Picture 1: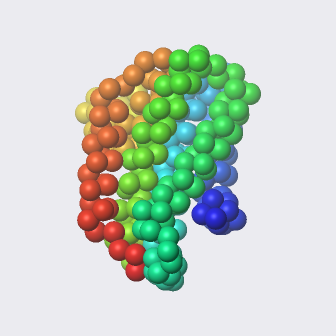
Picture 2: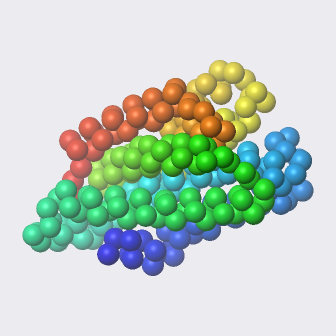
Picture 3: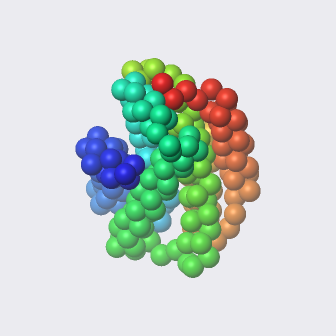
Length: 233
């Protein structure tokens, strides 16, 4: 049910599907000199991990936070809480819906990347799946923390603002040595930057232990705070 509701929401589809796909196609095809590749294949190799980060962030963080915030406002979570479904079951249902949407996004974005000439190896794909799972857990915990603690109007504004901020911070990692080293390392300590770098290294067959550690630290802190402060109404 959660998955059906999510996929029927036009705003959610815009955020989770249309924007990431449009960004990837535009960055690969438009004749803009980004300095990150001259051919569509080179650009796809650079931008697929970054756009995958945007997709994960859109679904697990922004989309989930807004959905939870308005579910609380309209009493949907309170009514579900009055049913025989346990609280952990409600949270698990939302989490499973997020995982399924992220898996669908990964398949679509990966297929578009392959069409442009992106060619990760089998090890890179396997590591990429693991990193996407870690990133999804991190942003999902952050989304539940935001959506489960603040008023819906505040969640709507703050979730979209943080989405733009984290997209910008993640782009600093993509720019690599074109930005100051201090800014690059600060960006790597933010979830979007950590996931972008970890995914990029994963698709090249290596593990970014620093990025994985940053993601797990953010996930642990957000999960503890969400368990403590989450309200169903």
